[in-house]
Length: 276
Image 1: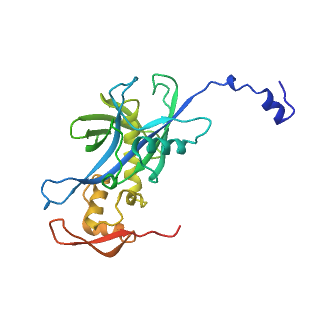
Image 2: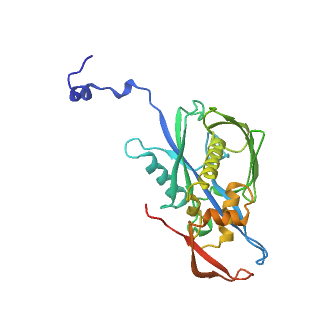
Image 3: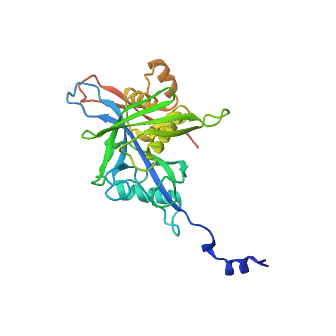
């Protein structure tokens, strides 16, 4: 049928003529924070952690997953949905949030065709003063390494430990984009191992050319603490002179010092914000 005007088209338009999809957002909430030490004289060890939820319903009942939820098609944008989920599940708001990728594998959800747009959220969990949901837990990333295009990740929350293994294949010879395939996974729901790995890879890459790391830092910090955060994210030891050059224009020294840590007071620095 040929319509003469936009108004005529909208009056006769049948939205049911198109197959409908469900949309969700999944949030990879990452923290690099100090692990508690029994001996106060020891230097605090930094650990990268992610927040997971234990599912209490099918599908994937009793398995762990990222916080997420379905988008309200009539009232929400994707980012608004992600912020709502974060607020509901973690009581967190006004934290760094960045869109990661859209995951659209046809069989990623056994219920129906569900497309998910994932987000990275960054926070220093030691600064949180709100309790997370009772079925949520922070999992430290105990192992994160790559061997022969296989990625091995081990997650541990103190009571539960599990490992996932993924294969990494270059998608195009002219780019650095990769496809990931799950080889071993008994504990994470949906395709969330791929979402987690994609987010960790994105964070590792962006640390090299952005100031993204400071979204995970307290207002005041020592250079030693900042270096540890870089090393945890990059998964490698950095030489002190090289690290100082990397952050030379990113931080400024304050008159404050760190005391009461069982060692000589250390100068405290803060992020040097630049004009946009």
